[in-house]
Length: 179
Image (cartoon, rainbow, N blue to C red):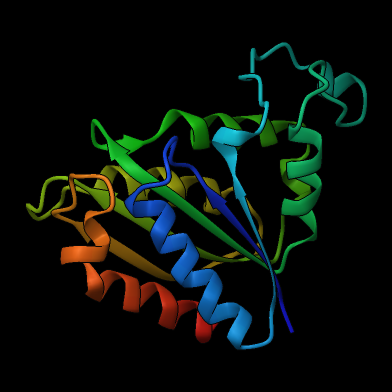
């Protein structure tokens, strides 16, 4: 049994959030311990680069929900990062969480990563920059590996993944089932 943490970055319960739910369903059916956090529902201040955390052994100057999220990132075996594509990059809510890991990022090691992204456009390369951003974070986490992605393109309207993106929901479910 693996401890799986799913961070849903979407500010709304939309297409990428639905992919998170499908992944969670598969992972739970496989017997894993799964927790999904909708980061938009948490209070997470952006990093100001003050580096108080370096002087205090990883304690951030901001006392918000990030301390709890960070501890869960450290404890997880598997980390799932999900984001809609905003101007060819990751959404601000998830990026804020990733930036705030600076306080203890060296403790996020030996992880399996999955990336779930959705985009309105369906042209080749639409999600490349977003995936590179997520991979950049993963690359900072020592001994971590990418295990799979769902590249949900051509999904603009809220909930469109249920009507025309069924293949993406199946992909997310199967990734969770085989995590």
